Image (tube, rainbow, N blue to C red; front, side, top):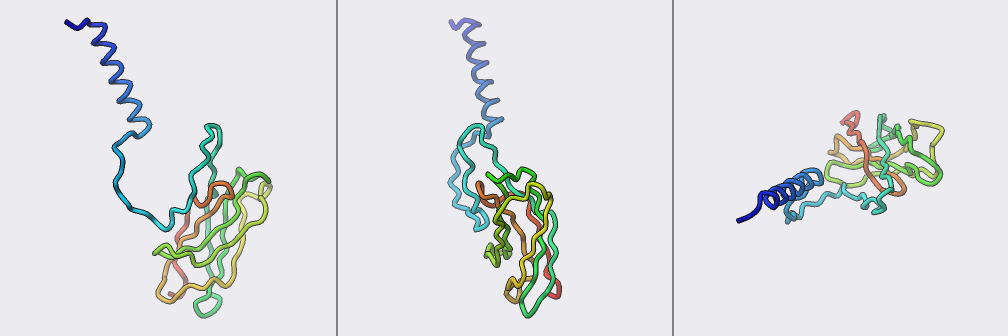
Length: 154
């Protein structure tokens, strides 16, 4: 015969395991091979106190500047910017994941949040009517809020 204390301990252990799985998202291993060309963000640092930051794209202005050429004015917010870690770029991505253009930022914008930078003459192939702008952090890669915009005149 099993004592009631042993039964309670077993029930509490099972409950603790169920709660831990619910909180951490325990599940059976995935066998899916689904990958996305937009998933280029490297894993965040494994240090328990390392923060993961990504810049957010807040606004995008697009102006045609020639046959299949467009100028982009991109507003980024990265209030965590310091000389040690900052938003260091953004890119223009086609619906199929093809990177059509990139803009590199060479320094932090700690005292200018949010900030806008432009990239002129990004070639967008005929037939593409919408693109997505993604921000990049120098330590964590691409992530954060993105903005999709329709290309004027298309």
